[in-house]
Structure formats: C-alpha cells, structure tokens
Image 1 (cartoon, rainbow over the protein chains, first blue to last red):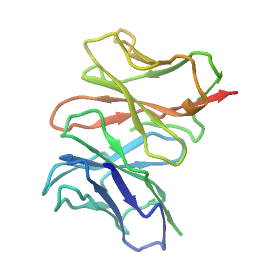
Image 2 (spheres, rainbow over the protein chains, first blue to last red):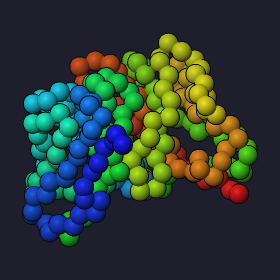
Image 3 (tube, rainbow over the protein chains, first blue to last red):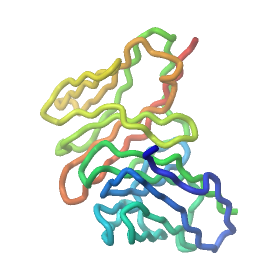
Image 4 (cartoon, each protein chain N blue to C red):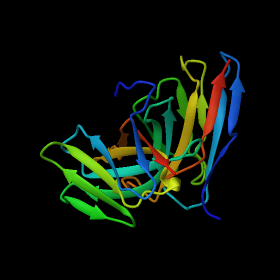
Length: 113
Length: 113
C-alpha cells in the first residue's frame, strides 16, 4: 500500500531535549511538508521541501530543523529552542510543489513534560 | 497568523439532511481554494478544490461554491452520513514560489442519527 507513515504516534520528552519525528512516504512524491496543529486550530506550516536536498522555512520554523537527504524521508527535529513544542505534528506530501492535494500521515502527538 | 479559540464552531445536522459549511478567506490573490476533512486523531484528507476563476465545482456528494465578491467559500454535503462527522478545513493556495497552503481554523460537523 502506498502512503505516508509517521512514527511514533505518541512521544513524550523532557523539557530541554531535542526530539526527531520521522516521516516516510512511498508515493514517489517530490514535495513534502511539516505542519503543526494545536487544539481547536488549523494547520500551520513549519517547513517544506520541493525536492531532495532542498527545503524552505514555513510560517513557524523557529525552533525546528529538517533534512531531506532522501526523496522518501523528511524528518523533523524539535529543538530545545522551541518554546512551546507540545502539539500534534503532521507530515504531508504532494506530487510536486504547488499541487493543492496533499496526502497526510496519521500524525505524531508530542508532549513535553 | 490567525487568532482562534479552543472551541471550534460546530454544525449539527440530522443524518440524511444536507450540510453547508462556510469559510471566509482573506487573500484575493489566491489561485485555488480547497476543502480538507479531518477525523479525530487522524491527518486531514483532501475532499475537493476549486480554481479561483470558477464559481462552482461538484464532486461525489459534495459541491464547493466560491463567491469572490464577498470572499466566501462553502462546502455543501448532500445526504449527510455519520461518516461525514469530522472537522472540515478550508485552505487557500497561491501558486507562486512559496507553494504554501494557508488553512482556516476549521468547523466541526456532527451528524445526529
């Protein structure tokens, strides 16, 4: 089956620790995205990548970092510089940048204690 | 960014009735307007999009209407079913160098049996 996988589904970390969220897709999509969702709110774009070895900051990139070394993988690191990291993180992909149909993974709920 | 509260606006409909979910958008220069559905604990799922030069587009049991004069977008769901219960987000996209989707805050649809 083709799709996007995110792991883990739930993640707990102590304040001050960096944590990396995994995102893998086997849809052969060029573009990948990371969004953050807070309770009762829409999605806000953290980072996006239109092609391997290239990525751009979204609207709320501070405190986050990404890499895109492989087409199928787009991991997100939540650093200790992110002041309020507890949230639901969603990874998505699209055939290419600019396609409005994005395919989302199941999400990772990060709780910082 | 958007300022939203913790409580989403909620639309409650009887199973079998038609539902109309509304959205006000802000950017007149957007090229596409899109509707996504998010079930509890899952990632959003693309429903339908409409290009800015169109007024109406129909899909399977859904119709999207775009009124550019008042910057209003609506999603109509015919013969609403229990499986339609979810949070619905409108989004807009301007096909430029950023390729970003800007999401609204969402509306919760509850279908009464």
